[in-house]
Length: 470
Image 1 (cartoon, rainbow, N blue to C red):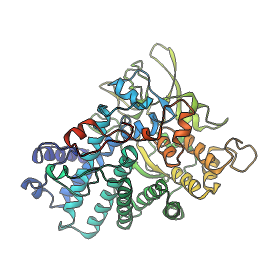
Image 2: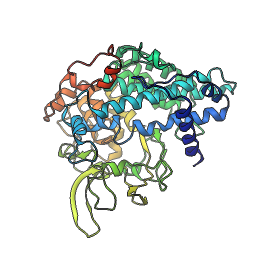
Image 3: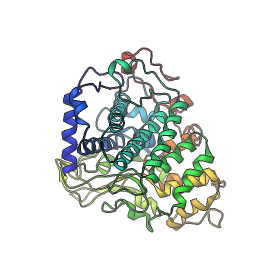
Image 4: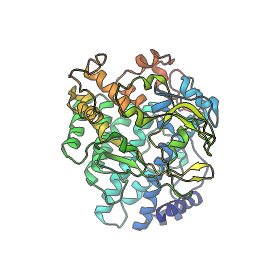
């Protein structure tokens, strides 16, 4: 609890000492004497680092940017009636995003506010009189977080302003959209630096490690088409023997199962209290109903297309998808929705489920499937299938329609990582998004595979260009 109280205190300090006129990047000057005096002691930096990690709760929120893109813009899920601004949310589902979409602008703000906090720490810690090991690890963790955020942003918007130091609101107006190639170059540079600074394991649960930096770096390389370097990074993690698959897939989703051998980078939640950051994935993914004493948001409702993607006997479907719910009167309502983050022991607090489930951003099964994708070697993929108790690729009984390693990996990633915000990014990385999604009725074009630059951003700075197609 102390950690979360400290974070709130720091947030108040930031708001009080650095307020100024917002720029299109939502940045503020750092010359204020109070800010200068704050970043001195290890306790100061501990507070700031906790606040930086807490931005994960926004970026990976079930109604955050990675969820909307990774799942709602894919062929895994849909939304019907949903809480909040339905018209803006439907635009993601229907590929009708407009530059005036309020959520796109909110996502833009969330990313830049998060990156600003990270840049402050990186700027200040270099000259701080602190233990060298502590400084290096803190730098590595912040470089990892910044890389993770820019990796998401460049996939969502393409070219975006690249900011790697604290800048004033006035300076921000001279920072225009940076070509995606330069952003990827910065990400790979930062992750290589982070890898050299981070330990194999962290004494603080939930912090970035060398394995997390290397796994993300491997995925970044694959996204840019550099398979050789991607394999090199991923294979080093594989060969370290630090990670492994859990024996049972379903055990990954037990609310009490956290930070296992399969987890490479995991966002920490603490259920049971309204003052702690409890997990709200199950609540947000529950149908838009209050039949069970809480009101589900109706996000990411499962479509038949992925339901039928699972092979006969694949227990991952039952572990991943609920088929309905029974209200207090015993009435059963059919509905398919994600149940990976279900916590049946969680208390209801103010009509919210204070669930205890963590959210895994990077896990070992993801890495194994990336290795098969990059190498064309089904050995890694077959480790995932062996756990699922299914026929291995290349053996009798394997589905004939997935007759190449590439198609086999695409299928396996879809069912293994279902609803974990990967699908749309996977299809983009393999250049399959337009073909796969248009065949399923999505009005997708290449230009619609990025978000529009928000109108408000361009109103604030007319030199910021718009993406083609908007």
